[in-house]
Length: 218
Image (cartoon, rainbow, N blue to C red):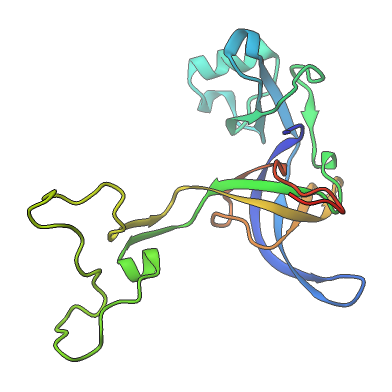
């Protein structure tokens, strides 16, 4: 059940030490307060969601439909418009601010962002293939995938075959990451482990939908 969600920007990675003096790798996220611009409901739109914005931008940098959308809501224009899918939206109202304090230390979250683009990559880098043999007749095929299809039947390559191609730069979600620190004054969030995307990437954070209850099992 998704009842908490917020937008952040990736700052980078660092490390901290816990109470037992163990190193904990963390990703630093900057979480400016999000302003609710529109509330979508199942009755009207077919699903529940909050349309939010963050940051500030000069109105003259927006087109007229965007300016009208912000003016209708009575919300100061922001850098981006994003949707936060929630199960319940009745407790929210237009213009309300959502800050990082909705997430506390120890909570499990799912993070979604566009992963780093790696450009065109072969099958060994892209899919983890072992490659061809290094000798005994192998000639300039050491990093190639080998046979990819059939001959007479069905005389084609099946869709989804693991092939060379563009790697990365796709929507990626990592589940069940732990919140190590939430600082409302500094508008920062520390999450254990890595988060998809380069520095400056926009990250969507929501409470973990597949979190295992304490003392329970999945």
